[in-house]
Image (cartoon, rainbow, N blue to C red; front, top):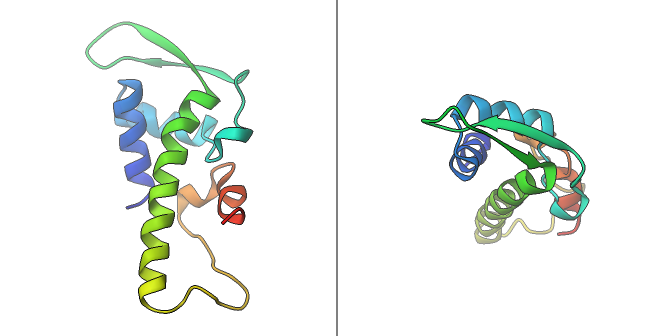
Length: 110
């Protein structure tokens, strides 16, 4: 489970190519729905169509937050199984998707 899963979710949810999903994830992605903007609008080409559709950062955040939450719970379950839920200094989240807006905010609430 990683950033590519987030990109897959976006591609499927927005009915667009993986490449376009990756691009909008990095340009408009926000992992914390409550902080995402409904004013930040982008357009994506649809798969198997000449049609384009507009979405907001908040729309995109719906997909991202759901997958970030799933990743968090999977990691937390493993850490819990290892008895590592209380670590001095906390945990470090790495990978390209760790740089998405809102990831830090999302994990701080947990």
